[in-house]
Image (cartoon, rainbow, N blue to C red; front, side, top):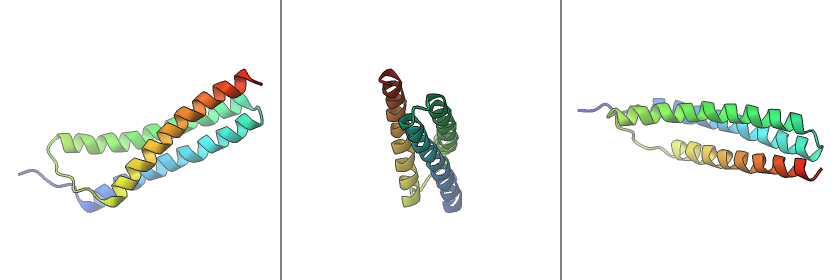
Length: 108
């Protein structure tokens, strides 16, 4: 019989994902601000930091997936759905910001 990941463990992982993706989102918006002010090196730094935060969120997600792959059962909770949504939209926002940084630099 396989173990089930506890609700508490799942919630901790979800909040870890939300924390890091939220940090990334804040950094991306700081990067947008820097782009508008033509501070391109600063914008690049913000986007690099945002990517590092996303990697931390992704690490938490990957650990959960490894547990699932090893046979542990996971009863999905709404907070995890929210965390996944938060991470995916932030990852998309970083992709858009990276492209916008290129466009801002090209047209300045």
